[in-house]
Length: 338
Image (cartoon, one colour):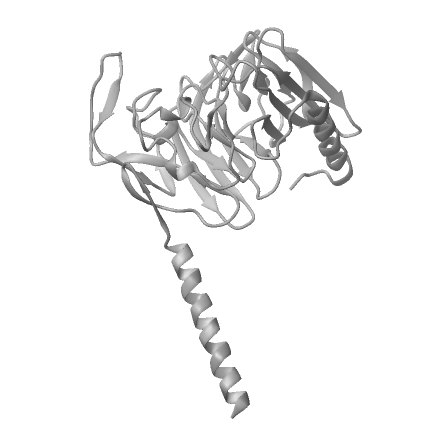
């Protein structure tokens, strides 16, 4: 009888745990725009677009999306009308985050990667941009957009360097993005078809992955044909320390200093880790510190950012370079960070 009672109690607890799990999976967050699904796990990626509105002529020389509400989608075929500031994609592209930091990529001709500085260690992206399209430029309890990308690549985005000019994605026949979330990885795969730059028209696939731990993202580029000049970089600012170091198989370029939009004295560090065997040269472009890659069928590198307002974050340059050196050692030993 006693064994039967124990069995019934365990069964009940298992049922409750199952129900609790279901509640977590079905949790929602209430935003000014309504209810949205709350992410589970420790790492998360999303892309959110307007539905129920219409494309209309705007005050500039392109259309704008008017009306509608945001909804997260697993896949997006970017409409021909979309460009910068059309109000169609929430915070203008896909986003990634874990407990330390977040990133976003402008899914338009700019194709730069921006940084979400986070003051909390919880997942916040479902809230961002729900209370006004670009409200994230102002400080909030969770943090804010902390990087001024301007005409650069941001931190670790990609383009093509031709005759001293970095070409973004001004001419592309079609762009599609797909989001995949698991407990171990948040990934966005972007397919660019018919990307035109001087002397070359190619397809390019990029896979951008973030993980539960660390501040880094992994980038894997696969061009349809081996092409000269594919590059990545970090947007440059005046009077900001530029750092570089080579290990045995990997190297990094980095910047550190007062290059944050969040405050005059806030410190921001950014870095790119690249394979020495894949790099053709390091150079300085008009807007970025650049790594130019050799022609290859696949290119792999990592990017990261560290803001000094993070919860238990990196707060000075010495700590930042120490963190980079530790990651460089891991890469030289294991060949990967994740």
